[in-house]
Amino acid sequence: MLRRVAAHRAPTSTSPVLTRLPTVTPERTQNIVLVLGSDVAPGGKWYEVRLPILPNNSTGWVPRQALGNLYTVRTHLYVNREKFTATLKRNGRTVFTAGVGVGRPSTPTPRGEFYVRDELAGFGDPFYGPIVFGTNGRSAVLTEWPAGGFIGIHGTDQPGILPGAVSHGCIRMVNSDIRRLAKLMPVGTPLTIT
Image (cartoon, rainbow, N blue to C red):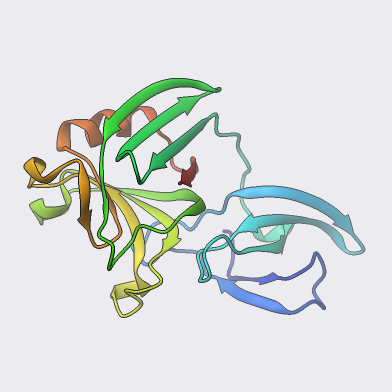
């Protein structure tokens, strides 16, 4: 995002505002959006984007001039909550698979369509492992968490508990897997959780 912008219900500045998108994420990285489609309306081009709000899977429209450079991402991460697996595909071909931990029944990992918003390293807390990917997915039950309960994909200092339903909603991997994933998956990658 080049500037703070309102996301609208329709591709026009007179339609209702769904949320306001800041230029930085709660983790202080540049805020990016996943573009789903476009429309040319009076006043210019608009893009439909995935929003980092509840309810999950929300979309809205932002004007082109609020966005920076657009780029194509050829990867897609799929997480299967029942099989406890993560699969990364590039151009439709599987390039990575791993067992994962997902949310417990009381703090479930949300189902839906999301995207990877940022990549963070150097956490001082071994609980999160060496790398954390932030997503736009939100926990519907942990809304009191800092920044509203965003779902992450991260390593763990307890690899023996994986795979399984072991987290507060985040997707956990053993540290060697999250390092390998970080070499293959760029920020902006779509994420499907089933």
